[in-house]
Length: 213
Ligand code: DX5
Ligand code: ZN
Image (cartoon, rainbow, N blue to C red; front, side, top):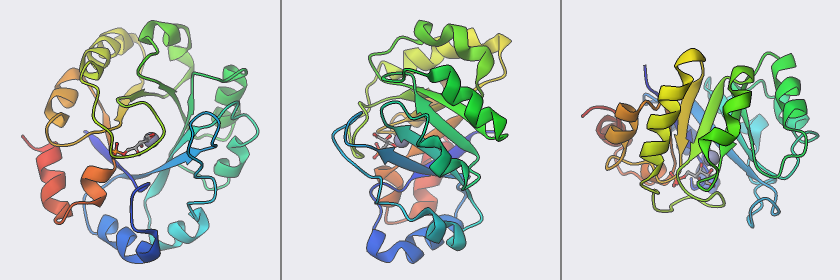
């Protein structure tokens, strides 16, 4: 079953209650939270999300995406929200295994994200250790960017490789109804979609066009 994770990076934070209500009333599985530290990427969103407040407004669990250098210590701030997934990046991480083990210890699914320029072969030796690979289909840093088309081949290759492992493939960045079909055929298990969904005039219809072809 494909899962849909909505990135709320570009939502209307002044009206967060109605934004989350819209999400609650539609077939969305997870709320994707993009944490940026202003170093791993130029933007900083560490103060943008009030996770305590949002969790009061919904029963959905968080899908945390940490775009930060050396996330080991910052992971604790997100473990306390008991998310479904915490994803850290493969890049700029001097203690990847330490991060993986810390997340696992708390019985939270652990994801590793790879940037568009990172080859999937670079993470082959950790596939047995993780629950999910987040394949970035834009360079991280902001929402609303154009989908990088060769991501589809990357997902296909990863899907062939992972047969031995029970891991999920998630795709993040520029996901909309023009590329979702190819991604699902290639083997994506979770689609992360931000601006396409949060800027939609009719969320229900947009979700349908994303998932049903
Ligand atoms: C990019 C983020 C993505 C992004 C998704 O750095 O990790 O989650 O905000 O938004 P769209 O779907 O607009 O690319
Ligand atoms: Zn993300």
